[in-house]
Image 1 (cartoon, chains in turn yellow, orange):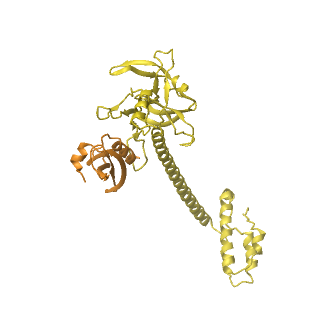
Image 2 (cartoon, rainbow over the protein chains, first blue to last red):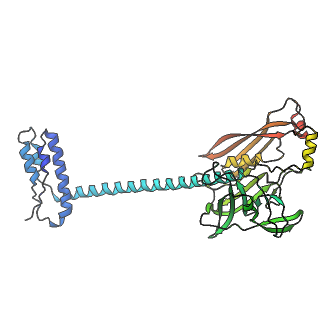
Length: 324
Length: 91
């Protein structure tokens, strides 16, 4: 006959107290017995268990008023043990399930928040980059397909944009001037918007980017052709999972008072656009209750290209008293 | 983000029609209404002068069957044209 014996720690014996304490100790003993049964249930030969600790507890309770301890420690039937084990299992399963649901919902909420923040940051970044455009003059390199003349540097095409901005990805508005490149790039059946930034080194850096020109109707001298924008190891994917992404440029008011128009390609050489629109269409349909999606960005450009005055103009203005 | 984008769309209009009212939709559950009105006008209201126009953009959306709104204000310096003089009139 093998009996299961459970040893209760000596420290528990040091406690003395009323019947409530003894009952709680008894419950703990029952729990320990239950656990032991789980471990050794295969070896059960008898239902007549006696627990060592109960004898000690009986010894402790002799002086107390309670006499129920001895009867409660008399033993446990297999049914009681099975019921206890069943209850324990149900409690454990319930606890684990609720923990899992909590962890999953926390993870999902966190993912949605991260995505929302990412979309908002990308929107803000594009807006800041365009709003901080700096009009930089450069001269095209002599010896290339075009004669050397001064241009206000700005490359504006339907899927590419290149300009100098005072807003830096790393340092915000406190960084150096940055040569900024935006390029729409097809990737795995969708489109993504790539962003490059380089420290501005001087006008020569910009003139090297002009490759030539193509004739365009209505544009004297044709449109400038720039070097293609290449993805690099430092390229930032500003926005991805897009169906379409197109840039358009708002012309400035003409001297003949014609209203400004939006164009897909910026042909002007000596002026910057009045505004830039980046039209974005995300792959998924909008669902504002669950998460934010990229939206189109329209940003006015406040910087203006100022033409250098000729000697004659300076003379005339001085004569008129408008220049010292 | 939607309101800012819409405000920029209205803001870059040149010439900005003052006064004017426009509206649009983002989708079936959300949209916007905008009103452009003179905010500060010069003492002498004539073409060639400058006034400040206020753009009142009201963005609305449906949530739980209720229409919710949020009002945004934007300001722009506007060159006074004969159109403005005709529409608003000298003050």
